[in-house]
Image 1 (cartoon, each protein chain N blue to C red):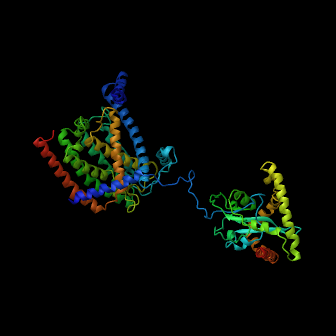
Image 2 (image 1 turned 45 degrees about the vertical axis):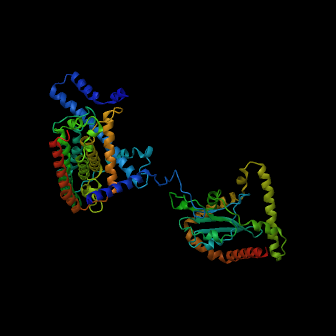
Image 3 (image 1 turned 90 degrees about the vertical axis):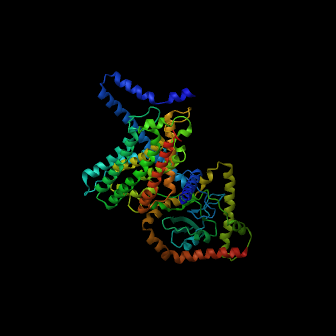
Length: 251
Length: 355
């Protein structure tokens, strides 16, 4: 009778496999179908643009650059005539980025984010070093929560502060007002205009070759930059950050 | 309805071919030779297609049992994946190891391939769809399927590789052991037919469905069970696949083969599986007998594919037996059971309880 019992077990086994044969496969056919990525998953680092003006949110404060544990981010800037920082290049080396998200945490201006995108394979290793234009393009459609809005409103308050900072602070709102006016004009015109009107774009493009030339010898440069410029830059950056904190405090 | 299924019957094709050859003025020995060779090559083509289909089907069934999709890229659900695989295998280099036994190494896959296809000379695919109705048909089938042992031994010896040789030796031991219960369990229905011809076996099961030999209680189902177990072992399929146990012997007897020779072994394996299913259908499930609304060859094909499905389910359900368990099962369980079954069937026949 043991035989009959064994036979029953064998048939039960066949039943189980047969049942699985009937159920639908759980495989996701990747290029055609995609899994839904969790909202807070950390993908590529992208630069975020202002929703209204289409310009980069980055203020070249270099906090992300210093927060980056692998040194994947290099922020380059110049001083304009008003001694304000103007971002000239933002390089992200995707080959050494570890997607830790510390840059996103350190940023006070919603300038960058780890988007949900994860498809950026290329043929060459060099193509994985992205400059600010590429990062901006990729981050164009990434939704984000704008942390700066408080600060936009903040400068309108006439806060009595040390005289040195007054010109800067006065100019900021003026500029924004101009931008708003310009926008109002643009809104009447076709939507493509804002992208065209991004005047800073051509300028960095002129400078881009120079930075690209630098890239082969990037590592030493990255080392050099702090040594050469840290003295000035870090102090200035520090000033900025102090300013920010002061503003926040005043708010 | 009746006329439609008769319209789909293929046996007029065979007689029409014969008449066509006769009208060209061929004399008898050559007439028969050409007729048989044309039919044989037709059978070969059909079986190659069936083997390719079975490879695809097995992959799909394996995948769906494991809740995967399997091949999906070439055509609808990857239907021509195996054709692409075959083309790839044909293009590959035929690697020949230096220390091989040259003639043995060369002939092993050919023997395996030819043996796998030779069985179908006597297989009744449908009403009148039989290449040659030998009067020793089932004996011929048993004899030819045993060629596989020789080819696997040849492959194992010729490869000059200990894994391959071990695989060949194991397959020889296994197939020789399981040949006995297989033959005896086929003998049980033969007792009632009184003929070894495949056509006679099928014709004796015409009529109502309880004329099929599986439904002749109590010995019918037992004979079928023992046959399908022994047949699985004969076709080297998974509960009994010790000749090519991947975890023990790299890939068994075909380790050293590549390219087209490997493809021959591979296709022969699937043709062997189809053979087992076809013999099971012919002997136990009434062959091409069925109901009126479909042509006979479709009935045969459908039943055979169902048995093949059962063999595939076996493969993806049961774990492999150890060598000693395998031998013990064959000699201590299957052989006694089949012999007792045969004796019971003989008793029934003698007492006239069955016709």
